Length: 165
Image (tube, rainbow, N blue to C red):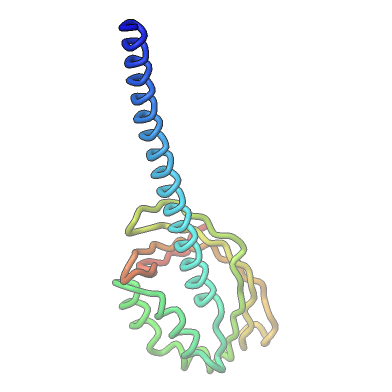
């Protein structure tokens, strides 16, 4: 009888250890899934912000140039926002004189690097530009753009833009 009690006690102890260890692994798996979901959401948010900024950047119509400029400025921050603001002072006049229309779309975008506060994205675009120097006929234009983004006020903003390759 005493031997049976010892066996049952050991069995209960092993079962309790198994439950504790199993609970630990279940909790860990749940945390891993939550982390992966948060990372995927961050990737999606970064790509959406980069696509939106790029689309604003490659779609400009002289008839409503200020709206195009404002769209880019809305997604900009830091030094890029300051440089963009400074460089667009005379752009409306130039776009109007040249009757410039640039239309484009994002073909693909890929996250190169990201953490919780910053990201780097490469974007490929295709589109056309038409102005007085093209005889107002659309001419194909493709761009590869590298965007650096930072998380600011719970949104991803562009802090730098570079044309690459």
